Every structure is written in C-alpha cells, then in structure tokens.
Image (cartoon, rainbow, N blue to C red; front, side, top):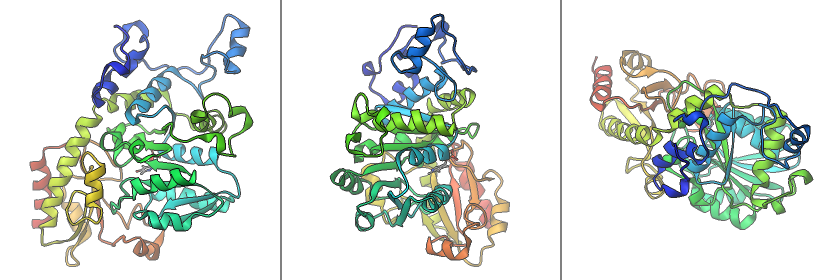
Length: 416
Ligand SMILES: *Cc1c(COP(=O)(O)O)cnc(C)c1O
C-alpha cells in the first residue's frame, strides 16, 4: 500500500487510522505487526555502535525501542498534535517516570488537589524524597500562583478530575506557566485527545493513561507522555549535558526516554501496544457515544427524587460548565452522583443488572463503583470529607450500550 503522509489528511480519525502509512508497513500489512522481539542484529559492528551513539537511527534494545511501540508513539503524537511521544507500561509509569526524569531533590511541584488517587499517593512519595509538593484548588489560577515559590519547576493538573469532575483553570494556568517559565504538565486521560488537546492551553507535556479511553476496551494497560514543542528546555537546569543536543524543544522528552525509560524500565509491551493501537482507531466514535450516554443518564438522575446531587460538566449547574463548553468537544463519559440518605447504597448497586460494578474507566461497558468504600477507602473518612467525597457517592463510567437499556437499568434499581 502506498505511503501516505499525515499532512495529506486533516481529520482526527483519518489521521489515527492511516498514521502507520507514513512508513512502508511490513509485507503490505494493513495493521502494524506485533514485533515480539528484544534485540537487533547488525552486519557491520560500526553500524551497531553508531545506533548506540545516536549517530544513526535504528533499534538497539527492547526496553527503549520496538517498532510496534514506535508506530504507536507516532499515532500518539498525531492525536495530541505534539512533536514526540514516549510510551510506558501504565499511566502511572508515564507520570512517575516524567517526574523522576525532570525533577531533583530541592525542587518544588505545584499540583492540583483534585487528582487520581494513585497520582496523589505518588506525589506524596516524591514529597518524602525531597521534592516539595503543594496540592492546591486548581479550578482557580490564583491558588496555583499563590503556591509557586522560587524552587517551583513544574505545575501538574488533570482536565476533568475523578470522581467529582472539577475542571482545572486550564487556559489561565497555561498562560501563567508560560509567563513564569514553568513546565506545565496536563493529564488528559479523562478527556482524551478527542475531546481536548492540551496544546490549545499551552501545555508543555501531556500525559495519557492509554488504559482508559484511548485503548478503550479494558484489555491492555499503557501510558504515554507527549512533548508539545512549546517549552524551551535550554533554560531548564535539570537537563543533563548529554541531552542538550539538537532542538531545545525536544530535550525534555529525550531525557524522559533516554534516562527515565531506560533507568526505570517500565516499558510498554508490543502486544499491549497493538491492542491500544486498535482501540485508538475508534476513540472518537466511542467517546462521542459515551458522552451522549453520560449526558442522558445525568439528565435522568438529576430529575430523580432518590438522587441528592449529580456531578457532570455537561449539566448547566456544574460550577465549571461554561469552561467545559468552551474547551471540550463534549463532556466525557465520567460522572458521579450522591443518593438521598434514605436510599441504601448497596441495595441500589446490587440491583443494577446491565451496569457492571467495577473500578475501570473508558470501557465499552458502563461501570459503577461506590467511591468511598473502594478507590478512596485508604485515605480515611476525614480526608474524603475534605475532598467532598460523600459516603454515598457512586461513580459511573458510561459505555457504548444503547441508552434505553441503561436508563431502564437505573429505573429498575431505583424502583424495586
Ligand atoms: C487511570 C489513571 C491514571 C493511571 O493510569 P494507569 O494506566 O491505570 O496506570 C492516571 N491518571 C488518570 C487521570 C487516570 O484516570
């Protein structure tokens, strides 16, 4: 099949589906094959040395490079409209390795307080290891600005926070970081690049858990970091001399790959990359349907007498509804709600038949989880209360089922 440059196609999905065709695909395969392979042989020892020294492009060892992963990294870069990406075994590995590669003891990080639980736990660990961390209400740029010190090197936010759906002041934080020369890292997992490209708010680096919407089928773990090309790393003192070569816009991602991925070794496997690449082809179709289903369920729930509160950026009463409307293509597939005190949480959940009680996000199946008793259990009741996590809070990750079946399932669970 002929080579097709991405510059020839404009649409988001067309680019994802045809991205592998920027190079000849082995044997004319329509899908990039799975290279279940670790090492590469060379006829000329000088060529092997040149590959290791970065003088020549080529494959060295599977922890850092693999053709299936390289192909997916290129797809990821196209999805986020960035300049380069690095993939990891999980979303947590992507976040952890990024921090580990770019920050040192004595540095300071300002993070949104509305964070994925494991990211919160990870940042607390970094805090113990000498990287200061402040958690702030990132729905307002003022809170971020107030926490910045002369040691601050980085600001980290999520787009739509899980489970209460707060939306960071993405645009203004981007402007603030650009003025102050701070690295701006945006975790785009919850919106996915279909709903939102953090490049539009001047992000420096974008993180995605591929496990969720991009892979989309609950069958593979993965993570990615994408360099946007807007940050000039030449003024960033933590870049090692050996990576201060070539365009300064790529020094950050180069250090994450050459040092972080190599030293930590949380590499994405080729089989997982293949599953994720297949999933990514239908990202737009799935997320549009999941957003439509979430909106319909939220309208139903917000009019239900047994429901106390519904949290979804698509509802006009949501505190950041206007911001979401301005920035995002739709409002996503994740929402949460609280039950009225007289409704028994466990009875309600156990009566659901179609909706599955499970912890994941972004699956084709609609999933429900009681938040306080599972993913937020470890932190205790006091911290939960401070984060606005009610004991009856249920988080839903909407799937692609027919909406009539989902509404009937909710109706049955309330009625019985
Ligand atoms: C799930 C998730 C992660 C971590 O991803 P894994 O692939 O599970 O390691 C990070 N950030 C957000 C917002 C997530 O939802």
